Image 1 (spheres, rainbow, N blue to C red):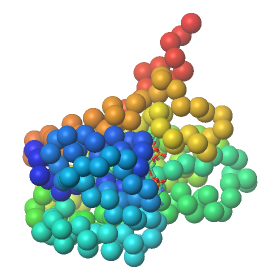
Image 2: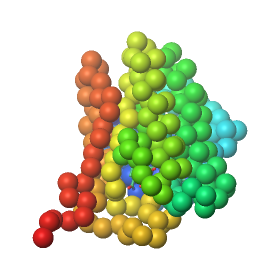
Image 3: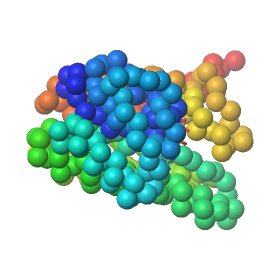
Length: 233
Ligand SMILES: NC(=O)c1ccc[n+]([C@@H]2O[C@H](COP(=O)([O-])OP(=O)(O)OC[C@H]3O[C@@H](n4cnc5c(N)ncnc54)[C@H](OP(=O)(O)O)[C@@H]3O)[C@@H](O)[C@H]2O)c1
């Protein structure tokens, strides 16, 4: 897909992978609508920020109506990026943290997708990218809640691409390993470092997937740091 003038919706745009992706989509000429609690840090004529807590269905629905009014009823690209992780022993994980992860990482993805798909079907074009994690491929001690949400992203995505392919809608699930962002703020034992993936590199993989020809479907995108703990001594 040529991204020039394509309508893209990105959730979670204030920092990290979402902010890097917005920047690259704008460089490619896309018209970007960002949903989040905090704004994308740069002003750009083709970027519109719609303050939205994506856990709230009514707020997400309102945001999509605003986008459809501004875009002549069109969304070409949806990036379900907003997400967060809390970590710890299962018996110590507060209910509020479990709920926040489920609502943000899973429910919000469903909300945005169900609001985007009808118009994508009507327009005969679309690409949905869901950001899972390598935590959606493997279980890890102290990461049970976050892993559960990302396995849900995997199951949703695996079903969706089969459901939507005949409507010319692509679905790509991205599985990044550790990426140098603010994500680790709730993980006192892990500090972001330069051997991690860089958010702009993860974003570039997504832009590549979006730009593939119409008959080409990148179903899964697993990217990991080559040497996550640095070179072997
Ligand atoms: N960093 C990693 O190692 C890593 C690896 C694999 C997958 N991921 C996934 O990649 C995605 C992006 O994470 P990141 O690494 O870029 O982390 P980040 O720097 O913490 O960014 C997360 C983004 O999600 C937004 N967000 C969180 N809760 C929200 C809510 N309720 N409503 C609206 N926006 C909300 C945040 O916006 P606010 O300003 O509103 O907080 C922020 O823009 C997440 O789904 C994460 O699980 C990250």
